[in-house]
Image 1 (cartoon, one colour):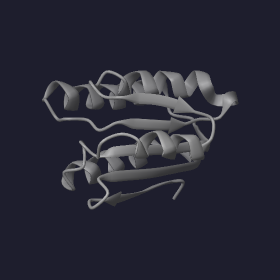
Image 2: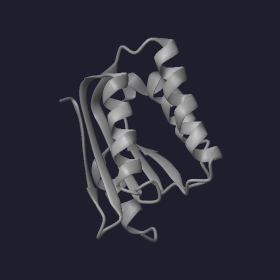
Image 3: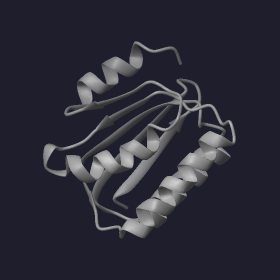
Image 4: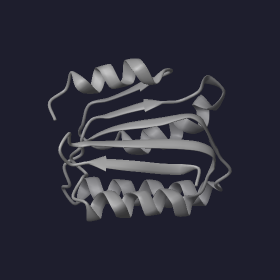
Amino acid sequence: MPFHWTIDPEQRLVTVVAEGDVTRAEVEAYLDAVGEAGAYGHRKLLDAKHARTRMAPEELLALGARMRALHEEGHPMGALAAVVPDQHSEAAGRVLGMMAAADRPMRVFRQVGPARKWLRGLPA
């Protein structure tokens, strides 16, 4: 599975690693798991430096609509540190723009180390 995650309730941290082609179904499964775990408010580290997607624009819009609905329903969103490769920054920017709609700290990084350090400096 090119999209996998761990939810650490003790650290209040969700770590996501995306590799290869990521599908809408994988992202939907992730959103379901985070919701079921009550982890929307956890800090999140998204490591997508080896990921890409071939999702159609309609699929990206549907995911964006789902994320925005969560925000509008009042779910608190934890800080997000996203690690993306330079060559996919345009596509990643669209997806991250959807995530940025939430009222939360968010930063984009090129390496995992600085992203982890930034998240550790934030309240859990």
